[in-house]
Length: 158
Image (cartoon, rainbow, N blue to C red; front, side, top):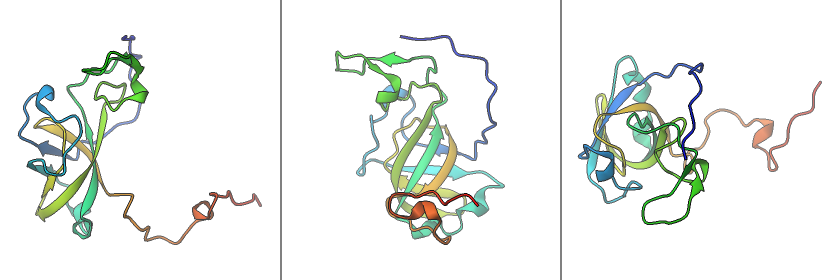
């Protein structure tokens, strides 16, 4: 089931790079990235290359990308080989209102502006939105905030 999309009035996104994979069509991509998948390259554009400093310390990173070939108006879908219809937000389908893909990948090495990784699931040429250390293994560098305490307490207002 599709709906009519509203007029765009939202934030500006910067494509900070381009992802290079062996797949040229969405139907060729694995449904989810595979740890034993092919080595893929993530090319980071200037002026964002300096932002890679320190990323080599992490064996796994989260890659966020724009699924630029995806339909954006589906609110209910029936995944392949599954006769049930579900809401788009209950699926990891690339067909979504804001087609942002996210994948945890293994970082093999960084050579200048190029990251070599395993575990991607997108077509060649996909625009890159962001890179982050895997949140499951990242330890924040900044001092703790009250929200970091067990229960995520909110500090009292003064």
